[in-house]
Length: 267
Length: 290
Image (cartoon, rainbow over all chains, first blue to last red; front, side, top):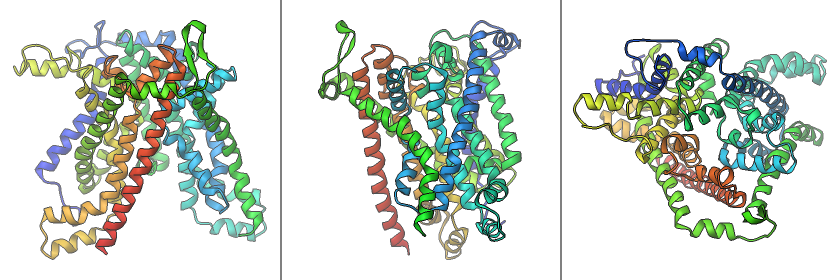
């Protein structure tokens, strides 16, 4: 491996500073969650679980967590179910309007979330379902669709068509071929897309803040509101839990898919 | 390709297309119509008139164009800093050896999966009056009193760079993995110095990655909401937080819709214009090389 020249001392110093810059805020959040004090501070002598216990008993955070969890699961599932046939159509067939449809269904990535939030709020107010959980699911399905679609499309593109053709020539029907050959082969892409879509839904703040009602507040919106009003260390505790969950998800993704592929392949 | 197969393709994409028409095209059209409506609190809000008054008001009022200008300055500054910091980092990462390479890549890209609000919370602790940065500066005797770092444009820039620089690293990383190491070797063996190889061989090859990364960073900064709202506070408004305030603060929906439409159009014009310029540059450059 001669061509991987080692980095010089200057490069390593830069790299160290960069990692510190990236990780410092996350470390600080986790540390300050263990403060025994009434305000956000980094504990120096005493560590306490006080704010984790407060979090456990907080109705606000618990219901927001449940809302986000169900919202993410439903939106990611519906999105993936909608993205699977779309990916098949876009990858396997050439037809008039294909490029236009491709651009159309990827467009949520290009539209500022604030604009989407405003558009959703206007639409849901007019059809009178504003603030409902269903309206939240409906807009999240759209927002996270590109993430699910991209990973499924990548899996379909990377898969050789030979196995499908062999199955068809041996007499398998269209549906059987899909169910017994195509689906198992693209399953990693489907799972990866679902997880990425779930995370995007779980983390979405800007568009959600417009459509959420007091009864349907999601976790990021709850954290945002808590931060812009009274900052008490419960936000640090819930953030620490979220960081821990991301670590778990990363290990899981690494096992089934290879983390590099998910992170680098997502663009 | 017979007609039958073409129909299959269209039929498969139809459900998603219909969903997007109902939940994207229709709401955006409604927002545009809303932006043409009047507003009067005395008669209960939205007035059923049609005019471009909101656009004239937004585009001619110094209050609003200061906000648009601030958003532009913020986006340019964040993009430049992301290039300055993210490109060398991606390159150093690329030259590392496994297992450090994979580990560091995960450390750099992993935070993308952590909610922006959580990452912003970390910064508001770090930059606070009693935060660790102020404590350190006081201890070193560099400042006599705790510095006010929150609610400044500088703080918003730093935090936005933190939030978005992983995307720049990712974008450059992708083009580095397509780089042919043999070309660099050839240049070295023909007597080119490190700097020359970097400048004349590596950089042109990763230029598309830098350009697409900066486009992503620019577009996301221009439409960012949470970080400017939480780190910049009420006084340092940007376009997205202003639209939010018009909608949920003053409840002037038509005005808020006009700001949203301007943001959307500006976003598309910049992305399309940038793509066109970049494509021309890249093709000319590659044409010159071969």
